[in-house]
Length: 225
Image (tube, rainbow, N blue to C red; front, side):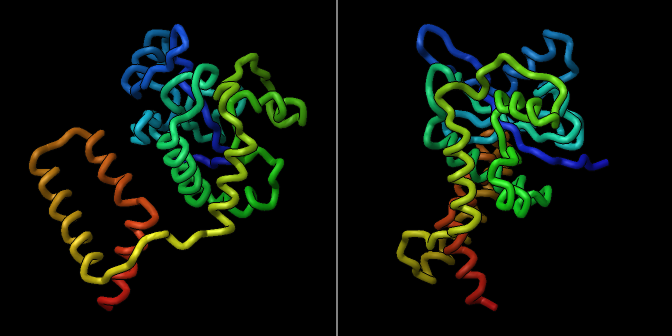
């Protein structure tokens, strides 16, 4: 049964050493969490340094990420360590896109825009603010998603995307857009025949979702009707 989601929470894997952050995979985190006695990875997705999104725990299952509010939250974990290095540009872009997708999926866009201080999108450490407001029972001592991840800036970027959609900066050409669409279909078909790993397929999906690519294909489809 689908869960009722009220908030989307950002994390980093806190995986680094000697000033270097590591490109942690969902499989690694899954192993860590099983070693501490959990059934599986606690997060719903993991976003790698190159922006690739790896699946974690099924969103319809209760995650294990922020004690006291897991029943109503969706959790995004970024590879690396937010106290050592900021998110890569690819991670930030992918994280913003995925967060917007989840806001739309769970019907949270209007509430997010109405309540800029409502922490509909929040970092793990901000659970302390929910505790202060009486909206969560358990505080944390963690800095997650890290001192170098500015959640206020993240929320501003998401709000801008939702309220000020920009026109993709590219030169539209109907023939080229059609060739792009047909070419992508061929690439997807070939990738399936090759049984490429899921990470490669996710990379293709991320390319297809780029604003310019999506806009060009949508305009081409509209012209064919």
